[in-house]
Length: 80
Image (cartoon, rainbow, N blue to C red):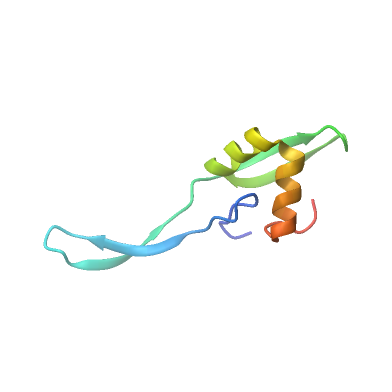
């Protein structure tokens, strides 16, 4: 899968490296992604997600089930 957070939908951005002389060259701002396993107690199974650091904070704040439901509603994940 591409480098996209499955909870927040964050992906890499493109920008410029700017030198001291103000010359600009293209660069890529990658997302802080992790492969993490989460346990779904309702379904008694583990789910592996590719999540960003802010996605982990979202899961901690809202809970795994609601975070997955919102991500599915927004189209970031297919069927988990």
